[in-house]
Length: 279
Image (tube, rainbow, N blue to C red; front, side, top):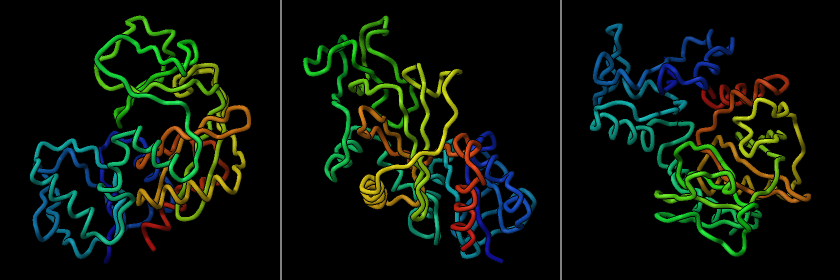
């Protein structure tokens, strides 16, 4: 039998949500491996996986992996070897670690998007001094957030009490409150609109529900081009819709799609993921 690995940590809400889909839960090919237990009661060798139940899973029996790796194991040798397996050996991986590295620099992502004709907000990166005075972006019209893959709350510069930054921080022109989330999976596009009074809708209890919306076909083609350039099978991109124009913010290579799919009809993303892993 060929197996499908769900690789991540036990508390990951995305893996938990995906596994709760009836067709996944009933499929005996799906196995969850808790990366936090690698080196404790799960062991990785050149031949395969030694599992807590005493069984052995050879590498050639793995047909695909849903990679939600958090890198939480203390066994750095095993982690490096696992990442190599995901990048080079296992036939299908959603997504391969080497293709998730684009998320480590949002400014690089922005430049790549701009190069293929996708609009981006007026952006600068600053570090190690007081809030910069960017002449092209008035203070009251700027927001700032993490420039890397580290999760952060997007805030208005005007509301920052410390008025200083130390690590590199991404400053952008405030493009309003109409948020567009776009998930792309194997040629399918799912776009949703969320309106919020807060700068970061993820922390706004009064934000509107995510509702389906239509994107211009030209933008979809460019977004497909960007996703392909990054080597992503599944991606979650964020845009702002401002005065009729779509402004790209970032492309997440490991999107927490569950929150958005719960507000979709038919739960199509889970079905797409399942079909990709078992095909």
